[in-house]
Image (cartoon, rainbow, N blue to C red; front, side, top):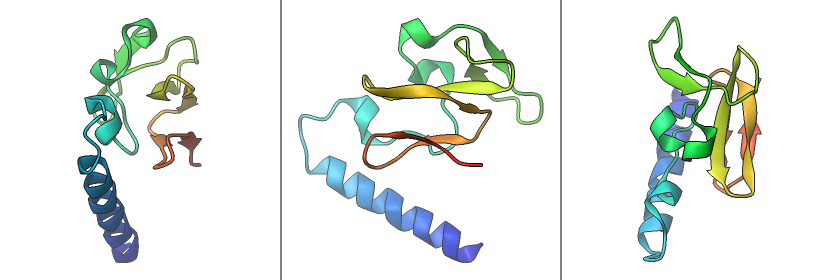
Length: 99
């Protein structure tokens, strides 16, 4: 578990350093939460069927995905649905769903 945490911190630092070097990056592109995106991180068209998750009380939107799915938005070309809390935007900007 410590190795996973250390790898996550290294990846976050690497992403922050890489995005800081680019001045043309929009705020949405800097860093997107790994396993959760709240309604304000989604474009307005995806902010529907929103509710609060029972165990953590975090808000999320389903956007026609289903009751136990969450809508994720990584870019104009990479968005979709993953099981609740299991999606993330990779450093390459692609949506990924982990089991």
